[in-house]
Length: 317
Ligand code: SF4
Ligand code: SF4
Image (cartoon, rainbow, N blue to C red; front, side):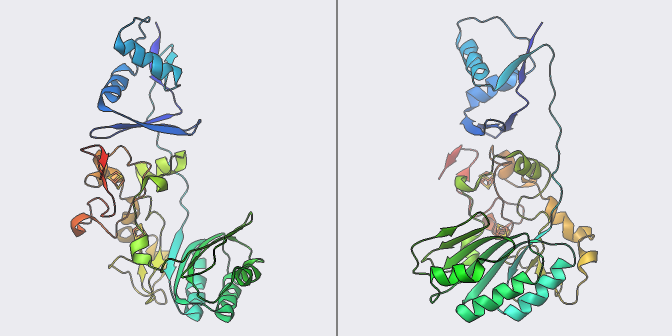
C-alpha cells in the first residue's frame, strides 16, 4: 500500500479561512482557499487511491504535480521545531553621539554586534565623520543606520563610510539626493521622506513577509521582532523597543548580564503569534513580522494596529 504524504519541504499554515503553502526548497508560496485546504488536510497520510476522473482526484493530481504531496510507502509525521540560535540585537535611538559611544560599549560587553541606530538630528559632514569614528571603535557585524541630513551629498557619504568594517545599510532621510549606492558590504538609500521612526516601524505588509525556514521556526517558538532585542531609548532607558513605555532602568546603571537572564525581561521574547488575538487564526502568522508596541485598541496581546489583514474574512482591507 502507498500513502499520500506532505512533501517535507512544504510548510502548510492553516488560517481560520484560508491556508498558506510555502515550499522551502523551491522558494514559492501561495494561498489556498478553504476547499483546497480541507482536501489537503483530508488527504495527508491517507492511502493513495488509483486515479479516477472526479474533481478530488484532479485536485490531488495538481498537488502531486506541484510537489506539494508525495507518494510514500508509509505515513509521515513532521512536528519538529528547530529554533535558530539566539543572537542578541539592539535598536538605539540617540541624538548625542558621545552618549551613543558609551551605550555601544555597554552593549558590546554582552556581545551585541547587530544594531539599528536611529539619529533624528540633522548630521553635517563633521558630525557624520565623528559618528563613523565611534562606530569603527566598537565591534559591529551588521548595522542599519537611519539618519537625517540636508547638507551631505552622496559623495560625502561614500567618503565617510567606505572604509567601515561592518555590513552597513544606511537610510538617509530628508535628503535631496536621487541616486543610491551599493557595494557588497555597504548600501546607501536616500529618500526625501521626513524622518519618522514611530510611524515607519511596525507596519505589516506582504512585502515584509519572510518565507525562509529560519524565520518560520522563530515565529513558531518566539516573537519575530522582540526575540533577543535589547533597545535603548533617547533617554538612555533600556526597553524591548524604543516605542514601548515599560523600561528596565538606565543603560548606565543596570547590569545587562543580569537582565538577559531575568525571565521578567526575556518572557517578551517568547510571545508567539499563536498566542496573539487574530494572528493566531491567520495563515500568515509564521511568515509575518510582528509589532508589540502598536496594537489594536492598545491591548498588548492583540494584533498589530498597522495590519490591515482580516484572517476571518481572508482579505486585506
Ligand atoms: S515592537 Fe513594533 S515599533 Fe517596536 S521595533 Fe518591533 S515592530 Fe518596531
Ligand atoms: S493578522 Fe496581520 S499581523 Fe497578524 S499574522 Fe496575520 S497578517 Fe500578520
